[in-house]
Image (cartoon, rainbow, N blue to C red; front, side, top):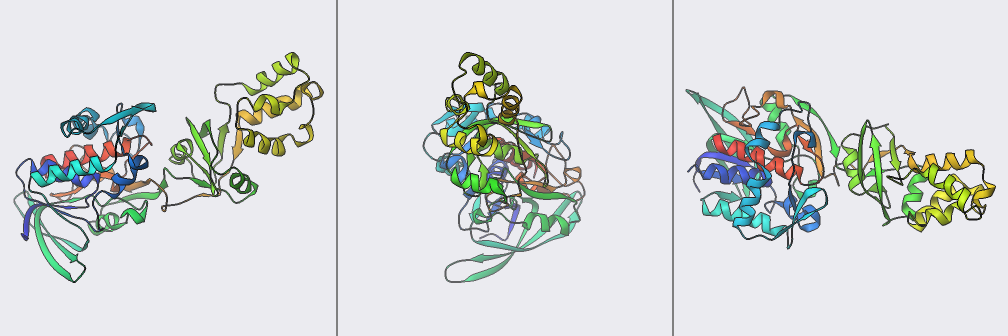
Length: 409
């Protein structure tokens, strides 16, 4: 293996592989170092194994960052159409699902194999099971910096410490989410060594847990899902919610977790698009001899209705609507449209799809992903303080930021 390269990329995930192949298209010598035993583990597990690899409509509003404008330049430079063109070139079958999300029809492996094939054809070297121990900025020649990367190459029979040199270093190490898939804080530690500021990090796109009677309710309803409109801190999402043995999950919960802070409530509308008060009061007039449960069973899973009955109107479970006061019906209707819950915590990085926060974008060039104070040092993908909504946005950020760095590194 060569000891000197034009570019070394730390991390063989979505952003790293995109940066590597883009740079190699410019005839740069590129080495990719991956600490885990396989490239693109997050790609493989995404979308239930079928990779939600982008979204047809990507805007800056789909991302969270201390600087909400930072992502615009890269997203404009490399669009969903650009990535779709590569997918089509490789003959990968895909389909559009709700909310303009694109998924592989066969397997996430198709996307990973496409990226690795592109890298291989362009002469990119990719090495697994490599632990990067130290990065040193050596010297500058004119406007160019040189970096020394000390890495340990592990194999089944031995470990070999090697010192490598490069003109540009691209940090695509991911973040803290799902450590079993290679997530780590190495990129943050590297940023600290170069005195780059960090925005506080926390798990996001992550399920909620409860410690009160709601935990017991969720355990009893494990596996049940329902469409809801969920709100927290002024943001809301209309998506499905899933009960689990730990608490609440599903797309609605993952989306709102980006905006929830510890101690906050979430407000769940169990009947989105329906005014529950008006519905029940109308039924009280038209069908006075029926029960609340009978009408709600037509709109919600029966097991959920049974739990809500025990929680909200146990005294009236056998009452006909005619026997229940207007005020009580209004109270029940309001509960159904605005169920207030206070999560105890999230499930944390173990199951979080992304990490909110990261390397502060104030010190990064938004056009190139290069650090402003260290020429030749780039940060891309999830390690940066850019976090997308659920639905292919985080992958599109990986493609776009990787491409932007690969164009100039």
